[in-house]
Amino acid sequence: MDRKEFLRNLGFLTAGAALLSSEQVLSASPVPTDNEVDFPVKGLKANVKGPVKVIIIGAGNRGRTYAEYAKKFPECMQVVGVSDIRESRKNAMGDRFGIPQEHRFGDWSEVFSVPRFADAVVISTPDDTHYHPCMKALQWGYDVLLEKPVAQSEKECTDIAAQAHKYGRIVAVCHVLRYSPYFRAMYQAIHSGMIGKLISIQHMEPIECRHMAHSYVRGNWRDSKKTTPIILAKSCHDLDILRWFVGKPCKSIVADGSLTWFKSENAPEGAPKRCTDGCPVESTCPYSAIDIYVKRKQHLGVFDLKNPKDESEIMSKISDPSNEWGRCVYYCDNDQPDHFVSEMVFEDGTTASFSMEAFTPYGGRRTRVMGTTGYIEGDGKQFTVYEFRSNRKLVWDKKISDIPEYKGSGHGGGDMALVCDFLEAVSAHDESLLTSSIDASIESHVMGFRAEKSRLSRKKVEVK
Ligand SMILES: NC(=O)c1ccc[n+]([C@@H]2O[C@H](COP(=O)([O-])OP(=O)(O)OC[C@H]3O[C@@H](n4cnc5c(N)ncnc54)[C@H](O)[C@@H]3O)[C@@H](O)[C@H]2O)c1
Image (cartoon, rainbow, N blue to C red; front, top):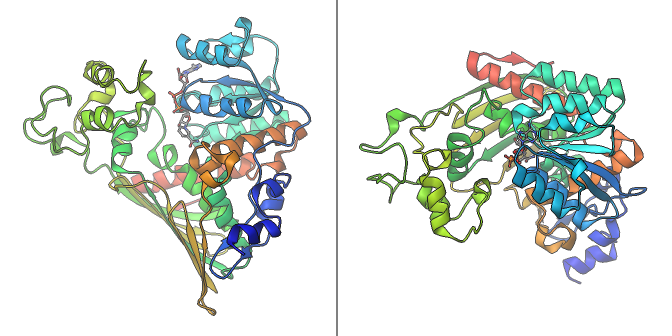
């Protein structure tokens, strides 16, 4: 009997598990064979009374991603309104979902100039445009799927939690990783007793060198003051995962790190301000815009290209002096650290260390979990549970591509799984159907703000 057959007999393959709630999935027992372990995966079709009506505010990369759920499961979700200050994006989404003209809005505030006409809003605008639309949406009686980071300060984050409680609405924060089958399975492995009592965690987020250059040196999240410090902008997912795995509040945090490399003093001799202006080291520079965008064709979503295969169109975009992605990485207006280390102590004495690293050739979180009777080590795709006494090594290696429903769902399947849980929570008016309440999401954000405070003050900071 092969592994798939074994699991099917136990009713643990996706189709059989489709009706399980998140809570049932997360408390299910492991299914070990001699050298593998599996856990049920929740299906993506939301268990809702009827289609949940949703307005997308911010029809960019993230807004489009969540809206696509409605194409996959129209019986569970309908996109009935859109807001984007870019006409082209507003109308592209409007046309794709057949949204009437009167429900196509420009600035987010226009959505709240008409009476409530949907169950929920998705707020997927830039980081500095989360707080006000979220506060307004809650007041207007909408439930909210809110992109991370929740807001730009601790005070704004706690305001949002208070507003959600005041109006009795649901706010689900897009901590997509905790909805991915990989992290859900790791959570299950920790909490099923396989490694005894949890003692400590080492977690690393390798950003990948080109992703760092694209997003945190040249791009949208380069300026911590206009967005949020990188520990939130990039790593609030990781703090959320650590808090979730430990299951206890964080007591204190100490952090360090800095922007060491992407500064003008490190520019190669003779480098011009833009890669396309005849840079003498362009052919060897790992951060060359020509290499990243034209040759490797990475991160092209920001350019709104007519034809992403047309190299001359990409070249003309990055050659345009007003285009930020054509700039030399040593001459940008960036301030985000390129390395960040931190150590946390939780209420029960569990410790966690977290590193965010720009200079890696790969992405995908690396995690090591130390328990009293076992150990887990994972690379973001596959993890191994080591049992000390038996010397058994059990591998979890479910591929998203092997679960038909999850195919194409970003963040290891977390994107669509998050929408599914959100719709179920909205339909049942029950926040507990989400794996994370707004209060828990705010708590991990507070950890981020305190980590930044510690990095800047070089002092250990208490977390309440
Ligand atoms: N959960 C995740 O893993 C994840 C991943 C990437 C980005 N994000 C977050 O998602 C958010 C959106 O990121 P993105 O990559 O989709 O950005 P994006 O730039 O592709 O999309 C944002 C959209 O908001 C629109 N917009 C800006 N101001 C507006 C306003 N006043 N009213 C209406 N629309 C407005 C923009 O025109 C744009 O189309 C950011 O906060 C980002 O940090 C989360």
